[in-house]
Every structure is written in structure tokens, then in C-alpha cells.
Image (cartoon, rainbow, N blue to C red):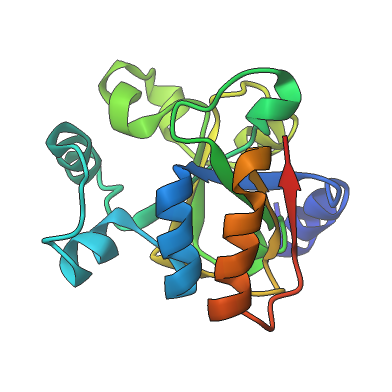
Length: 185
């Protein structure tokens, strides 16, 4: 399929979002930094501050995914389910997929790569379109290196109601030009 047809298929999903779920504490640091970094970048930038599970780093490095930011397709609170990665999400526009190198898989690559069938280890338009339709909910979109927290890509932040004021305060101090909403649940 040509790039033009890829873009046409993505345009049919403009109302969709992709999410990076993390803890509220981590989200405050991410807002302060202004970027969402890959595990590989974080590991190199601040090895003393990065608290990542060795098994996850090992699995991601072994499978070639340490240099990617991991995004999901589900707004867990809207589905009435908790996220396993944290209670706060950065919600991104699909426009990011036009500008960044990315791969998409139907399952968690860090934990399930070795158990995945060979055909699940390929990234193509069908897998991407299925992911955008949340088929399955466990789909991952891996974006290379880093994502800037700016109005081009960031749609909003989803957080527990009790954390909205704290997140808005950090945005006002560190990203005052950012015009996004912090939605509570």
C-alpha cells in the first residue's frame, strides 16, 4: 500500500487517541522534562534515577524495543478498568504517526514476545487499523526515541480527580504555553 493510502486510512480514525499510562509521580517528571523518552534514552540520561525492572529492560533490549516509547490504545477508566502501568495517561493525537517511526503489535512485546506467533511479530496496516479499533485492547504502538509534549501531538492528560490541581500546577510552572486539558475520572 502506498503512503498516501496509509494516510487516508489514518484520516478515517482522526477521532482516535493513543495513550501512555504511567504513575502520577512519573507524569509530573515527564511534564517537567517536556518529553516522553524511550527506556533506552532514560537509561542513558539518568541511570541513577531510572527505576525500571531489570526483567523488562532485559526483555525489551533482547527483543530490540529498548529505544521506543510504548503507547496503548485503551482509555482504561472509560472502559471501567484500571491500567496496569499507572493511573495517569498522556493522550496523543494520531498525527504523531505521520512524523515518527513506529511499530504496532497486538500484544505486550516486553512480556509476551517469546510466546507470540510469527505472524504477530510483524507490523503492518491491518495490525495498525485493528489496534485503532481496540482489537485487541492489549495492542501496543511503539514510537521511536522520544515524543515532545506540545500542541502538535498531545491531546490532553487523563488523571484521577484528586491529582488534577497538582498536574495543572506543574503544567503552569514548566509548560505554560501548553494548551491542553487535564481530564479527571
